[in-house]
Length: 95
Image 1 (tube, rainbow, N blue to C red):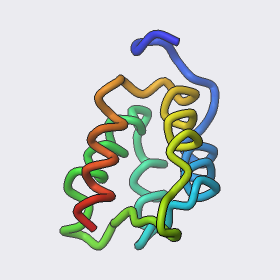
Image 2 (tube, rainbow, N blue to C red; image 1 turned 120 degrees about the vertical axis):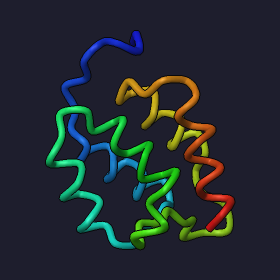
Image 3 (cartoon, rainbow, N blue to C red; image 1 turned 120 degrees about the horizontal axis):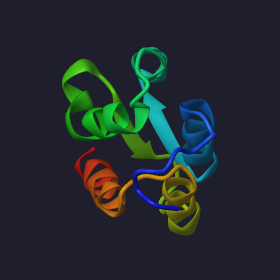
Image 4 (tube, helix red, strand yellow; image 1 turned 135 degrees about the horizontal axis):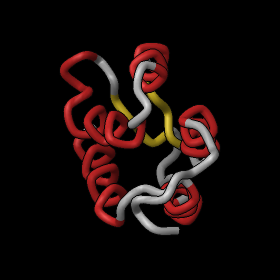
């Protein structure tokens, strides 16, 4: 799927995919509210992955090792740019 193409799946499905892959989201309600307010939810999600800790939004592994292939699949299925997964992985490592 091209970076500029639209994905019919919602941010809700994306977040649920991450949680199924072993990721916990602190202050998830605030994250969902922010993503619901914008059509560019992928961009907003990446901003929260980079800077969300200042407002209590953090992504952490619930297990010793999250399911990396499921995380990759979620990013690909929801049409994120290639760099997004690396940014997200860095946010996991910093929490």
